[in-house]
Amino acid sequence: MDPTTQQPAQTEAPVATPGPASASPAASTARTAQGGPPTGEAAPPGTGGTPPSTRLMWAILGLVLLADALDMIDSTVTTIAAPTVAADLGGGPGLIKWLGSSYALAMGVLLVIGGRLGDKFGQRRLFLAGMAGFTAASAVCGIAPDPALLIVARVAQGAFGALLIPQGMAIMTKTFTRDMLGKAFGMFGPLLGLASVGGPVLAGLVIDADIAGLSWRPVFLINLLLGGAGLVLALRLLPRDRDARRDTVVDGVGSGLLAAAMFGLLYGLIEGSTDGWTALPIGSVAAGLLFFAAFARRQGTAAQPLLKPSLLRNRGFSSGMLLGLVVFAATSGLVYVLSLFMQDGLHATPRTAALGLLPLTLGIIVSAGACMALIKRLGRNLIRIGLLLVLGGCGWLLALVAHSGTSLSLWGLAPAVFLTGLGMGACYGTIFDVALGDIAGDEAGSASGSLSAVQQLAAGIGSAAVTSVFFRIADTGGQGRAMTISLIVVLAVAAVCLPAVGLLPRKAPDDAPGHGAPAET
Image 1 (cartoon, rainbow, N blue to C red):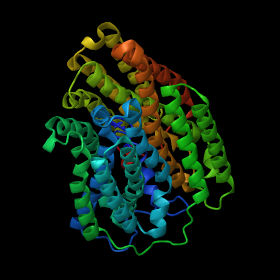
Image 2 (image 1 turned 60 degrees about the horizontal axis):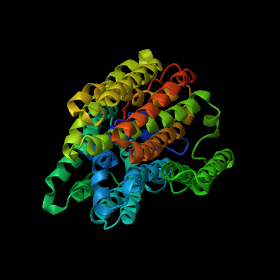
Image 3 (image 1 turned 60 degrees about the vertical axis):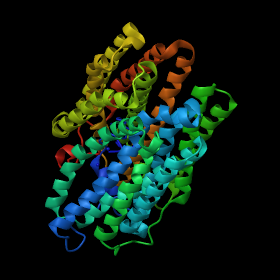
Image 4 (image 1 turned 45 degrees about the horizontal axis):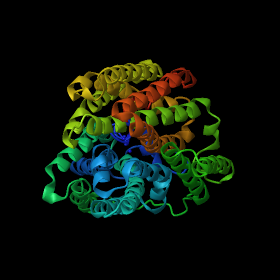
């Protein structure tokens, strides 16, 4: 999941970059509830029988953090690595856009059912399968000889990540004592924030080091070590599955309709903005909308729907979901084009570009952390503040680029980049938490799982759509003009979103991250 929310809001650095997947502090109940009962109600902490020893609980926490860090790092590394990968394998702008979007698309679509599969087959079993598959897919990414196989492997990474991520939080929720669960939740934000910083920085350092002449490939191959260690630890540490419910129903028809809808929309947006709005992209978007309409209808007729129909009638929740989709898409796309502009326009090395994005990630971490303390008092006003800061930061960047073009230094961009990061962190840390403010208790699991999926999908859509604008303008108008137009697009989106904040609930629920539950960053 983008310093962003894959969120814990991977929140996909995005930072799907240092953006929505990375610093995406989505509602903590999201991951917790995905592992809960099919009704959507998470099991109370410490009800999984005799709790493990304190030492074992800390070890399990470390394992869960490792899994989330793997997701966060791999959702953000392509922010820096994409130009180098495309230069080596070919594939051009299309490969650059799909590198991040394919991962986020698979993660977003399958995250909705990942928790249900854990209920059905057991969280330990799904955790092991997810970690093994993620590690194997990373190996394929690292040895891929052409763009097609690399994209397929990135899809597999996202799919196995969607199986892996919900299980860790569910295991903790069922087995930890309440005291330990509170301590664990408090550690997620800072540590996953560091992971979102680490993705782009790691990519830059590894590519510049050119280990064994492998260029970008060790960015993915390093997961063999991390994933292998995770597998060994999981086999030794995780409790056996004794409460799997084989009668749990996973709505295959609904899942298929949702997957088709998201693919149609994303593919159409990418192809249309890149190659022109011919019959193929228009038809793809139209098909995506039709599949989504069928998915919505299915939720009203299925015995165990993926998304409770009452949620679609809840104005606050629906508004929060749409607002989150638009804001996360625009800002994750912004982070992607910032990286491209630094490398292609300002001629920064991958390592230097990674350091150039560091102020953005730091701004997200600082702001998201502050929001955890302020959300109870300020509620949706924090989102307004965040959007205003994004407007200020992007406006500042626009003025700098319009004045100096490609003569800018990374140091000259740093203050405006940091201000933009502060605004992004305020949005990532609050939009989805506030969206849950007036839902019923039995809707929590369905709602929060859907919001996490939207966050991942937004990272994919944003990186594809905004980079499409960037490449089309760069081909004829140069890097400076491309960055200028991209910033204008983000500014317009943020301005349109401001009045929509009033449709959200005024306050977040009592168990939002600022009230003791984890935020995903």
